[in-house]
Image (cartoon, rainbow, N blue to C red; front, side, top):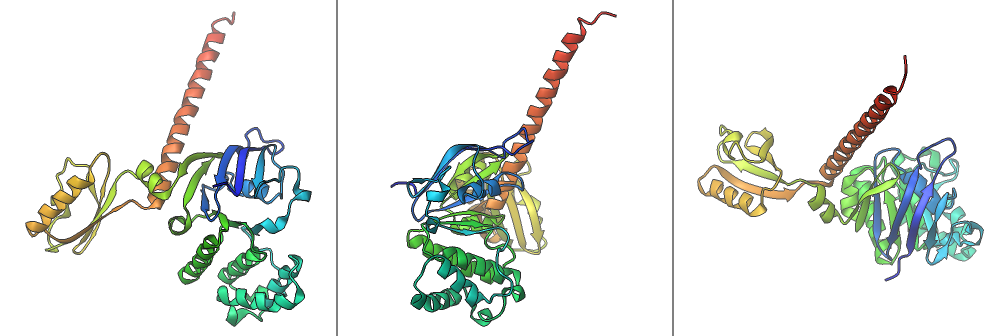
Length: 341
C-alpha cells in the first residue's frame, strides 16, 4: 500500500536560530490512516504543518502528497488534495455558517446548483443547524472549530490536516467531530492531526509520534507506546470493608503502590517488572479471602505515557548538558595549565 503522504529528511531552519525547528523528519501516512503528532509547545508540530500546507518552504528534504512532490512546486500542486483546519479559526466574522460553507464550495469549483445542498448536508453533519444562519462572530469556540473543520472537508480531500481540531469543544461536540473524522477515514481520507488530548489520540490515531526539539523521539501505535513507555498497570479495587487499610493489600516491598483511596475504592500503580499474571493471581487471592469484592486492571493511560516520556527525555537531556559543561571545563582546565604568570 502506497503512502498518500510521504515526508523525507525534512529540515527547517529559521533565520538567527542555531537549532532547526524541524530536524530530519521522515514518515509516511497510509490511505485511511489517522496519524497523530504529540509534543510540548515549541516541539516543531506547527512548523511541520506549515510545510505540509506549503505555507512555508523547508530548508531541505521533500514532501510528497498523492505522489506529487510539493517541495518547490507549490504552484503546480492541486490544493484540492488537502483540507486544512488551522490552529486558529480563519473565518470571516460576518458571514453565517451557511454562507461560509457556500463560499468555500465555490472556491473549490463546485457547480452552483449543487452548492446549497452540499452546505446543508455539512451543516447537519456538524450539528450546526441551530446556528446555520447566525454570523460566525456569534459562535462559541467549539462551534467555530466545527465550522473550520467543515470548511477543511469541502472538496473531498485525500489528506486532512487538523491542528488541534477539538480545542475549546465540550465532550459531546468532541465526540461528534470524532465520528465525522472516522467516517472520512472509512472513505479513504488520510488524517494528520496535532492535539493536546491524549483521549483524542486513543480514539482516532492508528499511529502517533512524540516530537521533541524538532525530531520524532518515539513512533508507533498507541498499544506499542503504552507497552514501551507506560511502565506498568493501574489496578482498581473495591474493598469489602471500608475500614480496611489499602497498604495491607500488597507486600510493602512490592512494586505496587497506592495512588488514591476514597471510601471502599482504591487505585494502585504497578511499575517495573511486575507481571500481569502475578497481579491477577494476587487479586484473586484477595477476593477469595474476602478482602476485596471486585477488581480491574488496565494499562496506564496515554497521558501517563506522554508525561513519563517527556520527563525521561528532559532528564537525559539535562545529563547530556552536564556532561558537555564538564568536558568544556576540563578542556579549559587543561588550557590554563599552559598559561604563564
